[in-house]
Image: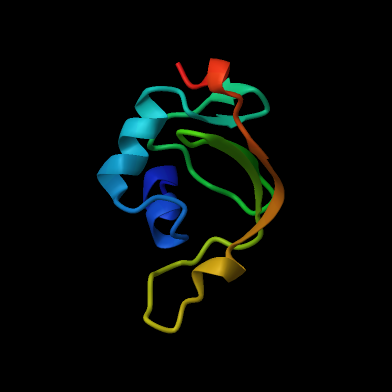
Length: 91
């Protein structure tokens, strides 16, 4: 599954276009490197997601083959760390 679609399905981003834009601007990292929207997600990946005023580090636990109504978004990832950005980092 593409990373931008996974972020939307896992509800780490509100819309796929929002996830795509964040990836294009380098706000989502894996091992300190920026990723492209078409990156194929695999279980075990650790992602660092930079939101406006916080940074969330997640480990991907499962990648669904297809999206169904019974899919629980919170079961797809595990939050490893959450920290707030300091005001000087907001810019």
